[in-house]
Image (cartoon, rainbow, N blue to C red; front, side):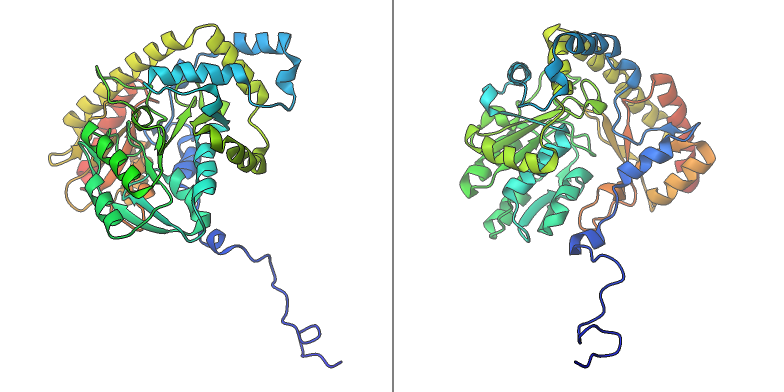
Length: 407
């Protein structure tokens, strides 16, 4: 049989390398993760990552918990089902946030990021629809990317949060997102918390249009003002999937989070999780449970809230003192971030290069959070939890000098 030159039996030449999925050909690494290598360089004063303060990690108490588990529970190093005592602890933690749930509704995950991925796989069809804020946590953008959804964007008010009426308008026009992703407390990157009227209105929309809400509450236990609004899950147990995490209140390296979801869906969540990592670390589950058994968490949270509030207040004062007139920033009641908008025409991506080179100060430029190419060239996110007050003042003075020179 004759063949065409350069082919086998008339077939086209095979590709020189593996053909990637369409979405994978377009994917880029998160700027936030790239910055981890940059800020690890000696001498860099970083306001970039969403990092808790390592000097505040409860290392001694956690070491005792780990030693106890290793000495008494060999199953901690084995495959095993979700650890029931930890789920019961989480039920009590949720009650502190005003959420009533049962241990059967608690689903353990390898960090909050995996929780978002599992819920996306549960709810979003390929080519489906999503509504996101114009500035959104890159982690949610990454988990929906493989599904190549059509994404509509809505603005966010820096005082009251997500523009819920813009969401209502899209729903009225027939947009049907797989779910609404919301950070109700201490938005990442904007730092704003959703107002109470907007929380109720969002729940009304969810029920009216049958749209689930994924509530990311990674920062809900880190509130610095008296009083707080309840999580959406405390107000509605039908349409709200709640995502929690130990990363910000204990340590990120534990990679331990949870979902509060309808008990009827736990089997489906389990199947999705098994495809990802089979199960979360049994050792981590048991050591966190042992830490909680010892009753350390309340004092630890009190310490975090006191110290992070001091660092937040120091950064707000330093912004007033060192940044140019016309700058605007949020005043977060919780969380780890302050969002800054600079006056005039400033490209904060270029500003970052100058700040690193001239002053050895790092931050995250606004474009890292922009959805669908939204403009954020003059914006930046600052983290206040990972630097002492003294270093915050020093770093903001140095960064303010760069801003004034370049603006």
